[in-house]
Length: 271
Length: 271
Image (spheres, rainbow over the protein chains, first blue to last red):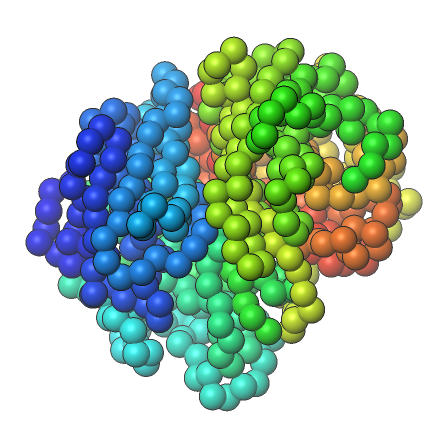
């Protein structure tokens, strides 16, 4: 992946310090309430394996554990292939700030080959992207401004309403803003654009944050090339909220209706 | 968790060798085509953190990466809390055989507290467990005989049919056999009882195996106590099959209709 001189590529940029150790820095354009947007942290961790000379294949799965707060500033990533098989490679990734572990991750890379294929989950029926209005982000953080969001259902909630809804689904056409050709790095970040589903479900603010996020990649080089920088269809909803945590599941689809990634996370909430 | 003198507890039993290092051994009662059932490996890894004196809280999430084959025989698990927060604790777990990494895992433990709660995903409408016949396992491996399975839909496929089906769902009442009170350890194993969905979808054999599996636990001590050893309702289906891999998602419900866990995996298949 070449640099597009894009804020995304600037944010995930890493410098090799020694074998398997990379230095990076949070980017103001991706700021969240505290520290950076989790999706950009996931993409940065994935990038450490992606740019490593030992890497084989393309991303197949990734789990990111948000172990502690990441502050604005410098960080270090340790990236090690723990096992390399004929067609899969397992990576262990750890992000540090001042010697404290902020984030751990595992990723599996795989060489893809043609096989029997079939879709089972089908995309929801929606109008084309250019028929859906762009909703500017109403929240005072930077990262949502890096995305063009066209909500079909479940837009940014009005947290002042304080009135529970029966469900938490959001369904939107989504694109990097400015546009950038889709790849696994931007896709894993896009899988985290769904703000905590409890905000949508309750229309009320509570402190909340992703604890762990897992993404499965169906897209490989040809699918990314086919999608280019056109909007993808993205959907998420919560499953159960209880005892201070909930799980949410998401899908990202190509505009031709192919499932590009499925992604799941467990999220903390305060009350 | 005390020993119930149950094959499950025998299989996940570990001996502390030194701080954060445990020795175990695969158990013949949980044999799969090659090595043990993945679910018992997940439970054994979780048990290493569970029995560790440093552990706080109960399991919230777990990702297991099946990096390489686990052979029948002895193994070692390294278990380390990489970060302990006020209410969450992040663990890194690694399983070795003869100094080769076979399996890596991360787990998050959390102390639970009463909060706002809501269900969003609802259980399918099914007859009560005692109204559904038990299907004995037709496959020549040991692990399915450790479960009582009552299929409402999508039973063990007849792989000789070699005729694709439009979907891969299985829905069943599930219980350890002999019965054992449910806990997080048995629950994570139960989340892997769904044989690769491609067998159901294609009704044909192809080499296949789980690459990575992530489970989110909603159940905590009170929910496990309420469920006891009665059957749980379990459901899984594939999402997309392409380029040698597919993802499948599963849910496990209490018999009172509460989501106890959601679980997802990406699976390799050969052709």
